[in-house]
Amino acid sequence: MSIERRMRGRVHYGWIVVAVTFVTLLAAAGIRSAPGVLIIPLEREFGWTRATVSFAVSINLFLYGLSGPFIAGLMDRLGIRRVMVTSLALVATGVALTTLMTASWQLALLWGVVVGLGTGTMASVLGAMVANRWFTERRGVVLGLLTASSATGQLLFLPLLASMVVRFGWRSAVLLVALLMRDHPRDIGLRPFGEPGNAPLTPPPRAAVAAPLIGLVLGLRSRDFWLLAGSFFICGLSTNGLIGTHLIPASMEHGIPEIMAASLLASIGLLDIIGTTVSGWLSDRWDNRYLLCWYYGLRGLSLLFLPYAFGSAYLGLSAFVIFYGLDWVATVPPTARLAADTFGRENVGIMFGWILASHQLGAATAAYGGGLLHTWLGDYQVTFMSAGLVCLIAAGLVLRIGQASRPLPTRVVEAAGA
Image (cartoon, rainbow, N blue to C red; front, side, top):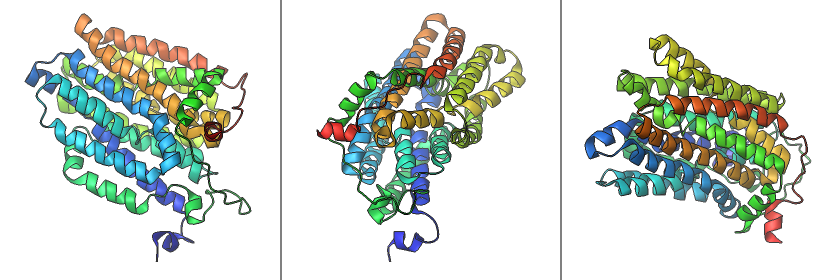
């Protein structure tokens, strides 16, 4: 008897897909974020500058985001499970070869290009596709959980998760995906969770090769796309690009031991589980524009406070960790929800993929720019405070989303196949 038949009648199979996706995102994010804790050790061993190491991280972040819309198109065409298994194998290869590197260009190639492209599958676009394919109800909650897994894996298991997953986890992760992952509820005769029982079980359209580029062209004609992409650029700049890459070395420069600095980042990951899950729940109930305004405003204030927190012992840093941690990626569920409402659930994979690419472009800018400014100025004060100011700008931008919205004229996959 198949797994689907044994589960039927007990729990909707969509929750099994969510669990598999959660574990995969958790492991992949932990692997991708490992260089953040290795910046200073790499400087010491190889004599590389902060800007050199940050450049490899910025390539990783940029390709992680840029691959999103193309991965969404591949998933529409080839299936989610097949793409996930291939990408997990690619990441494992890149991580294993990194242990043999001796030059900075090898770090840029292996961790920047290979791991960046491989982990591009295990990005927020995957969570958005799973939530919108498998759930009509509770989409926000599901997306909040999957987003929290990605961010928490990125923060919580530093620096041990990388070595653990390389030695034990990736084979089991690939096996888990191959056995339990399914591309669409209709593949196993189900409707999305919460969809009426009389809804037709028609197969979803498959994306053509040109679908990501056509989606970009259509999106560039929409003011809401620019607002969503622009605000998400600032989101990436102020989270994994800045804090995820530079908080540990900045803390160590202020006399905080490396283990304690990593614990601060891990605490942000723990608090993010609460913040992002609650954000997903709220996104099903409140105006998502106001949620985003609140999140960006709080994040901006916390980043403006961070340089002063370093000078106030552990009390100030504790306050920063609490406010910033609850807000870490709470922006993802309302942003994905607005993208689905604006461009349609059929298009959310490709369109949110491009919005996520903007997020990662912002992250790459902060990862490299933060290292470059540190090389020039000798500290991070200007970097942190500049990020805080642009977050306050984003808080105003998001309120204008939807004021003059024009929906896409057709589904991206249909336009691509026309």
